[in-house]
Length: 305
Image (cartoon, rainbow, N blue to C red; front, side, top):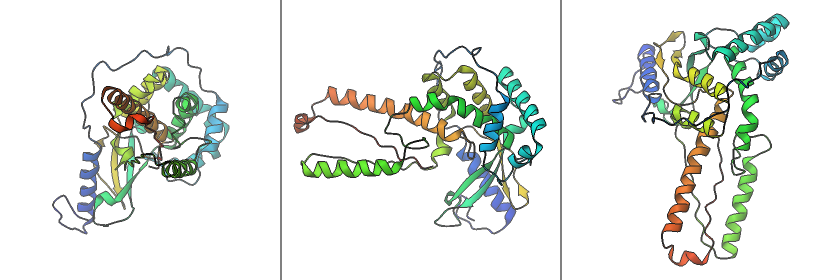
């Protein structure tokens, strides 16, 4: 693998250091957190306790035979443990709901890197997979289930990523139809494609929580997620070696069930603001010969991160 200066190495310890340096830099905050961005959210007291049936259902829905996180406990083990484990987990999750504090073991992620394509010597051509505590993933899966209705209701129909009942295949068909009609009626058409490099890894944390508050996700859920992200750390693992811990100050957690929903919530807030600016500029400027048409800006979101 090559370091920042392009020097190649096959030494495992040096490769580990290259990976650690790259991901530590990648997850550093790049934008200052704005002040006074909080909006009024629903009362945190109006949150029902987690039920044993909620925990059981979400545990059964978790994928099986997956690598464990830092605590080495898998969802398969939790299932085998049966009712006593469900009782204990329900009690622990409700304590977290009450105090908004999480176990320190949930803060750490174990990063392994998977080669994608391109130059194998370039660390950018590897995908980081974060192995998280399975009990943590169970907890955030329950949170996701509770928040999902509000999150989906605040997504436009143009968003097909990570949503039940939606498919990017439908968007492809729609785009083909738009192109055909623009050709048929000789109408101007512009198609823009945005390639999100390191999409999940680049979103700022404050943008996630601002987005959740703007759509009135209960403040208690937002506070818990903020506490999770505030103290998040990671280690890179290669073979039997691991790097030092480093902080995670931006990006959603890879491998976390709730991450896609958090990402799309933040992205939708950005697009909403962007289209508002576009509308203001269009109404404030002469569009020339375009004024004979009804100018519409349409976005079809093809999210695959």
